[in-house]
Each structure stands twice: as C-alpha cells, then as structure tokens.
Length: 322
Image (cartoon, rainbow, N blue to C red; front, side):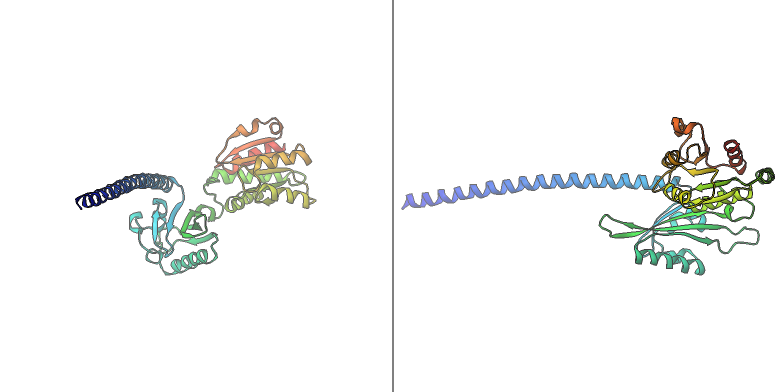
C-alpha cells in the first residue's frame, strides 16, 4: 500500500517536472519572441525617424511650396514656402483642413480638385490660382498647383501631396521669371536679336524640346520674340515624331537633358543617325557640359546652364547657327 502511494507520488512529481520544463521552454520562447519584436519595433522606429528626417529636409530646402494632406484634407506636413504663400504660419496649418486656411473662392476650387484626386486616384496638374485679398499696394501673385495621390504599393490612398510654384514673374507682360531673368537689359538684347534676324533672308526654325510646360511656353516666347520659327515637343520621342511628320526644315534642336520617355542625350544620338550635323543646344539645371565630352556631340552641340537670360540663349543660338 505504501509502495503504491510512493509510486503514485513519484509519478505526479515526474509529471510536474515535465510540466515545469514545458513552462520554462514557453517562457524562453516568449522571451525570444519579445526580444525579436522589440528589435523589429526598434528598427521600425528608427526607419520612421529616418524617413521623417528625409521628409523634413525635403520640405525645408524645396524651392516650391510642399504639403501633405490626409484623406479628409487636413494638413499633416507643410513647408515654410507654402506657409508664406498662404500667409499663415506653418505650424498653425497642422491638423487644420483646407477650408480653414483658404477663403471661399480659392477654398472651393481647391476642395473640388482634391476630391477629384481621391475619386479618380490620378494626379491633377498645372492648376493656376491667383492670390486673394491683396492690398492696393500689393501685386497680385499667380501660382501653379499640382495635386498627387499618396498611394501604397497595393494602391491604398493615404492622402494627397501638394506642390505649389510661384509663377507671378511668368505672368507679367515682357518679363521672365526664374528660368529667364527679368531685366531691361535682357529686353533690349531681345529687340537687338530680333532686328538682326529680321534682316536675314528667312527665319530659322528651332525645335524646342522641354517637358515642363511653363518653361516650354516661356522659352518659346523668347524664341519667337527673337525672330525664330518655333516647333515644340515635350520629350525626345515626340521630337523625333515631329521631325518625321513635318516637311519644314529644322535648323536647330534646343532640348532639355532630363525628360520622360527619351532625354536630350538619347535624342541627340538618334538625330545623328538620320540628320547628321544637326546643331543641338542642351539646357539643364541639373547637369553640366560634361555630357558634351562624347566625341559624337562635340562639333555640333553646346550647353546652356539654367537659369539663363534671353541674351544668354540668343548668343548660344547665333554661335551654333552661324
């Protein structure tokens, strides 16, 4: 009888030891899992801080107004440039909706555009808006606004990105903005260039290739005022199509370097194949003349750094065409 009780007790103790071992293993696994989760959480926090640092730097140094809105059109981030455009402190934007910042006329227009972005899930670009409530001594300012859906890889929309450019200088008759410097000397040089070209037997035709519409329109205006005939394209592929589909003789190609579909360098290489010797003037704010070191581009190409004046442009053109 005592032996039976001893055996039973020994069995219960063994079962207890097994259970204790299982609990110890579970605790060990839990500690490992917690340590792994802690590491993941720490890395996630670090990545969030890193992303925020990049975002804050971008917002700070960008020369145009930038903002991010949530799906209810509340400001999540805004830079000082856009705050100055809105005439409202940057920190006071945060958490406020668009209709709390803008006055009725502008507010309704912007809200309609933001709703369009959410509905279509596509960007809305190149929307012109002018400043409101200027005092009699202030000049009306004009802005070009762009609205982009902020989407994840699986197309979930988290909000809307806003980019606003001040184009006031572009709107003033006879004046040129950031890309083309406004000055009476520049205007006089335009008149001189136009007089020189009008004395020639026939105007030269230039194919202007530039993806930014605002810049394209400005440069086109300068070329026309200087006496040139102008054809336009928004990228290299479109430029090749224009040349193939038109019988007009093109005397020079003026092209940006960085463009979608086909950039300026690839365009120049294509031109060498079916129009060898075609003069090419590259323009860019992001690269330098090093691209002209390519032997195939040396003799008939030149480079113009943005921003430039009308005088800079016409001098380069005359050098290539003469």
